[in-house]
Length: 315
Image (tube, rainbow, N blue to C red; front, side):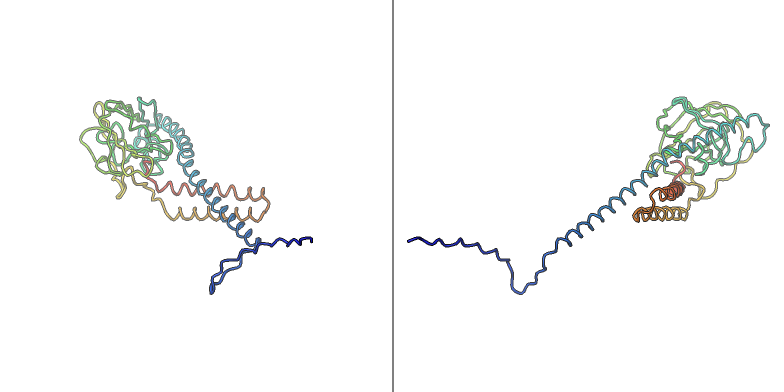
């Protein structure tokens, strides 16, 4: 007899582990999973774009402070040098011997570094953007008493960035229309930012140079004191009083406004948002670029300038 083979038995499908009384959600359809993944990728993309934009804005501000402001100061120095040379041909007058704020006062030189800068009258934020600023409430360099100069350490050409490298006995040369004067460095020290003790009147004839002690959020200032070789000249007239609340090296003197910072910041963000919206909606890319890029650059420069106005005049 022939044997009848039994057909193979198919294994039973695995049973889901279902607990009675517990509700289970049906597995998501493949289309729903894909939609979620696309949404997650889109969110991550916007986060990355936002981070890149923030880095670009920060990098732009650093470039503005360390490079663009140097170009502005260099241009201002060329104009001040021509202005000072032209003033030497004029007859003495109160406006020439003691120029108004923002005008050339003379030249300060550092033989150790082979550098020189045109001094400007005034020590406000606007003045020190042009070059080392002279405190008008103190004698001019070469005159009897404590002559005070405030200069930038990191921005606007950084004219005083090497003050910390001066050593006792080094020579500082100042030239005004009253003559050339030599100072020998006596001390290089630190003081609280905006200290009034270092700019107080003195019985000896000295030159006090002030700059920020560090390049990032300074809380102290570097102070170099030089003693005049020979006898100081008498000031041609009474010195003006320093405005109340103005601290050399710390105060901007022009009242940097948070209002302008907010204004330019909002305009910058609105313009960036409008540009992003136009690109997302695939509007004409060339037209979008031509319309938004000049505005973004303009508002960014104004925004950076508003931040800059709030920084110490010695930074």
